[in-house]
Image 1 (cartoon, rainbow, N blue to C red):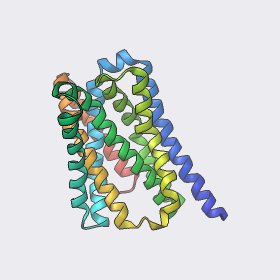
Image 2: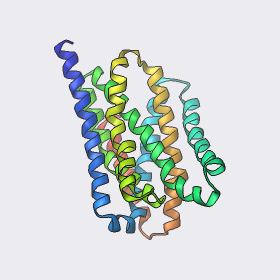
Image 3: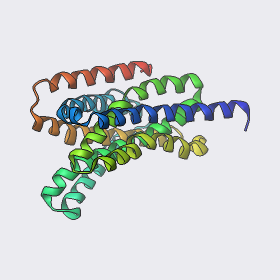
Image 4: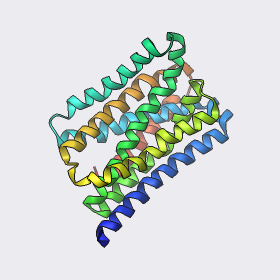
Length: 248
């Protein structure tokens, strides 16, 4: 392995583990101040919804469309796939009342986990274009890692999963999945062309839109907190900053 390839590999690993660290810090802080977190859960959920939905519409979807004309098909596939998982849980895993609570945590966890795994793949791709390109992508992606960790933990707890398990599941899904995606994809990076990457991006966007619109925002509405519209707006502003940081 020559020096350039080695440096690129180290950059990918460093960036992906930095993302993992930021997400883990979010999980740690919200689990440490659990009572405060649950009291303000609606604000975290509305903020996360603003970030995830806006990033999808402002960056991920346009990017996937620019890379492949088939992107809308996979956008629909991502959305419907998570919907199908949700329906499966409601119909076969447990009775309707239990699943209504359980799906509040499990479905977002699956969606955020898949998206974080794709983030790891994107690190591999962008750093292989150049260190500068990878750094720009990393700055943008790291900005939304913290709220992903926070909201994943909070929703798992609200689903009735005990605290220690919620911490572990949130870490595996939202944090560890990013370096895992980078490590798994790196050996095959030269086989990941624009068409393949557009599929990953479009599916990821469909999943995030489903999570935000079908789980986070309805959960916020149930809480009926007065200022959630403000935190939703802040999330949208953060999404704009993420897009700008990527030079879109």
